[in-house]
Length: 263
Length: 304
Image 1 (cartoon, chains in turn cyan, brown):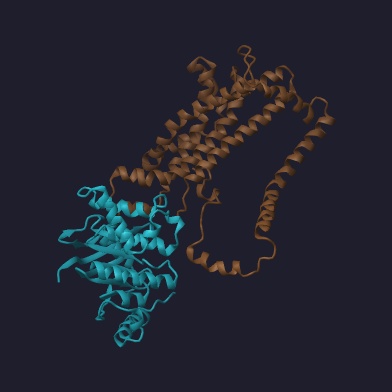
Image 2: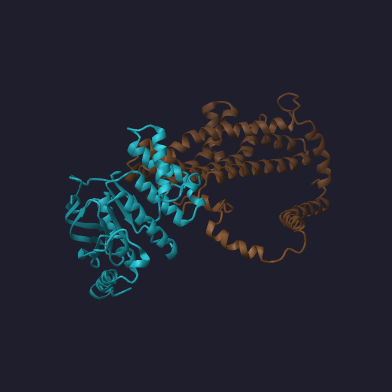
């Protein structure tokens, strides 16, 4: 399988008023094409920082990241991001929010009708076509996040980066959106890196779970492959021995090996 | 420096925030549950009437109180005309608002219009200069650090102190009054626009970076819409100040205008007309404010 993202000896140090702060050190990770990788760890372990590094929103202070054979030197539409708080522009309708990304990526090569088709298709994929002309303020939190996902997928990125995409949603909505995401990933074969703090979510969605040690100077503690067949079904997996084994392994890592002292 | 308190979104509290479909469908059964006893349309009518009464009774009480206090003052002090006397002199005044007997004797309509024209002109120039200046100040920290102390020094100066400078430069009263309006309405626009530019949420800028939007798209799709509510707050404050200042400026410069009219009627000892002018000035100030609030509400969006 082809390696899409190569992370080599990456370290991240922030200069703050109180001195320098080591967020990440010695991160080495390969992400293959079509793979779904979760980053999990206690809060403050730098998992979002790592995602921002892949996105190119911040640049590492040590080591380097390569995406598709080129060094990552800034953000770009080949690495779409789904933000935790959806980050839709509130003055644009759901359709226009998705269209903005589509236009940027395909506008030079395709005509307007085709761009609109792409936007419509992306909204249909997340079952939001009915609310295309609504403003983000007029739809629920779960629906906003669906549009955020549609915006990212519509750009047909090489890799999709999700920063706790369902963290702000209630448990039922979160489950519905996870199932939806499973469907979309199945259909598109997308490469995904997802930050989460939800153990079930990590096992349910990923091929590999990257577990991070506590900060400061966090790094990768263990990598757990999830050998469950796809597409996965939440109900069938609930009593699946392999699912339970993976889940237990993550829980052990988080609550025995990396127990958080003050939390 | 401490800028003006501005939270454009919070001021427009009754924005459209329809309940999410889930909650709507869940509350429906409970609405249907109680058996409709009276005819629903009658209930509805009674509800509407009650709402109208609730909306109008308190303000009516307030105005009643104002009239009562005014009447009592008029009774104890013979030089102040009471509400009825003022009403009697207001009727002929407003029945012919657009007469013109030379430059010093024109209808109240002309006076109001020429005041509004001065305010519009001065304010327009101020917007033309102030809003782009605000964008620059918000975007470039060096400019902000350079000009912030200058603005802090000039902003508290009473606009009327600028009037002699205007007279000196323009040699005529009319542009001097416009200049005064310009100088007093420019500060809120600069400061609020700059504030808005600085407060563009980082999330939106991250979206712009990830989508790799062009500079033009960033300005039209992200910067401008998110600064707009702040800008409108600045415009509203500016117009309010301009309307306050124009009356004083016209008293000093003369000509045609509501401020000059007040002064003229003072020289004529026509106190009824002065009181009428007070109401007219208040009413127009209120209307300007409401129109701008309406516009601001149209352009404010729920950001979270």
